[in-house]
Image (tube, rainbow, N blue to C red; front, side):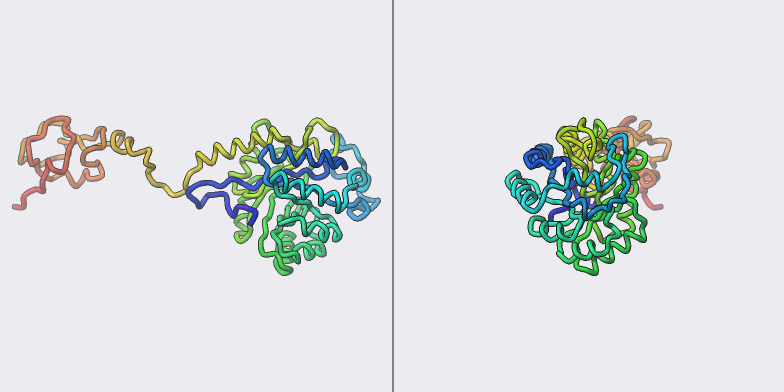
Length: 356
């Protein structure tokens, strides 16, 4: 199974997420650039390098208006944009899959039509379905029929639509499913990231894995992606580029190799700090338990045989004597020996009060 099943909240230690560097078509039709992006994804710590496989004539009609930030990507129609980046075919994707294997990352590509599903299938261990195809019944059925894990982005969808998609995938052969919280804005304002929906999806769909597909601008400390992992996303996807300053397409909201390294450093540091969700004293806390906790201490001298009263007692550090947990039990016992002010009380120093 390629993905972690949970984020470690119910394990003794946290587990690192599965990270997909979404190269998409940021190679802009150049095979060498695509291979370089795979190399950079590996260098940054990605588990997978993912592309997008489409042909403009199959994905968009002539009447398909832009829905992205036209200041960042000025192309006026979807078909016009897709025509710029649809030059790769089966041979190119096969070459990229081989390069991923050579480099040591998983190859994946999102198919946007039936032909792409078929020729990509032998190259991939799982399928990714884009948010825009969550209501595409024939594509969902075809992907599910391959009986591989499916990652389904849920951008711009309602719970009723997600229910429908989940049912279609399950009824048609998908046995391992991951739902990815996603906001379908390009780019996504930080206030629209809605990371709490990661937990919402986990509550609503307890039998599936949960992930996050991020379209926000990468912040300097990669806090949004880090927070998504802490919220429970075990699969993380973010657009990836070799140069964030390049105009248009998906460069303007993508992370680069340095961003990815920063995120991986965040995860490594936090794995060391998250620990277990079962509360128990750690071995390193043993000195504090012994020396920083309180013991019952004599507030004044008490003669042997005297009955101990509350006024005879106080509580002080260290915790090497009778614990204040036994405060009520000690009151009314008698001193088995002379006790001096500031003595740390031990059980050997006291005895039950004699019955009359």
